[in-house]
Length: 347
Image (cartoon, helix red, strand yellow):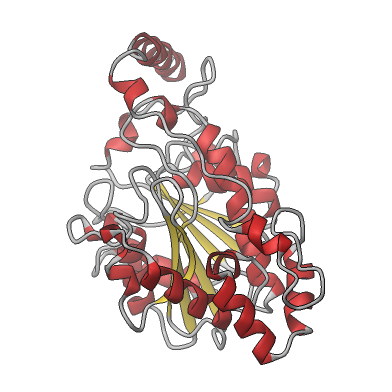
């Protein structure tokens, strides 16, 4: 009876959203940024090294790694200076080179949204200024880390809100910093805002189009980490980010998937994710996401509740987390549990 009632609620929700597409819902529709990094056409045409450069649109991360391994330090620097946006976003390129390339690209930008990102000492692993802007930042020494985590955010996140000062633990930078501070030495955390997120609660948030595009980008990003010889990551997925992770799950190569405040993962249960990773779920009683019907009707909704018993995920204690963005708040049981998972706790 409860499931039937929730299905009826979902149908009502679908009707309300579809009926409103000429109003606020359509006004927030986003176009996903996909494809190779900006500047790829110039990169492909560049004969400065008298050899063919790997195609950013088709070369695998492993092929990119082999290419850069065959370059001298001078040749790498030439490519960095001529094509910083390509080098900085090219999965499989050495992470140290990507840091330098993205720092250069950010310094050259005149967009005020990126001023803080250009500050000295920040380790920016990806920076794409197209659309609302995408960025990934590393906290800790990724090269020497024994444990690596990746934080995937949900709606209303872009390069301008990546590290906003209000609602800190609802931002990828804030979540990643908090997790990094809670873990022991030897861990590194990546805040990954590398896909076009929904804005508000319109059709984008209720459907899977942006998540499908994001899943491809997340998969390629983790393939780049693997190609660079880094440990398999633990991936933390917040809100709509868990839809991205659910679609990417079979190809992520993660040791663990941890979802928090999830509207669903586009799967009926853990088996439906087709992953060898351990799957964890957290949801506190004050999170508004609990009022969202966890069903899929007429293309709307994201399916079963990962925090529900029937889904089969391991539960993360979250009783003292507050609201939709309180899971990484210092002092919470959820943050302590996240840190244990990030460090390889095999409970």
